[in-house]
Length: 51
Image (cartoon, rainbow, N blue to C red; front, side, top):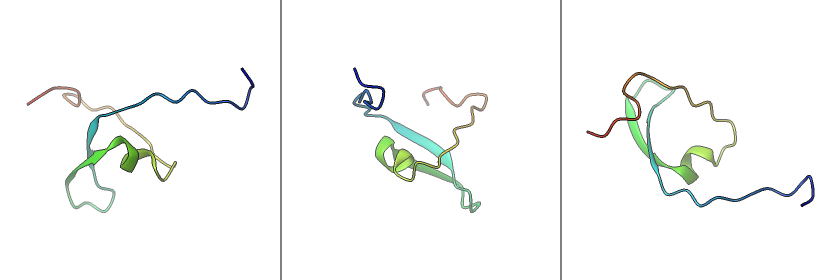
């Protein structure tokens, strides 16, 4: 495998994120989250719980 080759893994997840502009929570798909390629994911207590 070439060094420049990337492994593509299908992700079907919804991320609940806090908007940077302070408008609260947003539900975004993986494509929406990673489309800008300038994403910082920060873990928070309870972030990976189902409710």
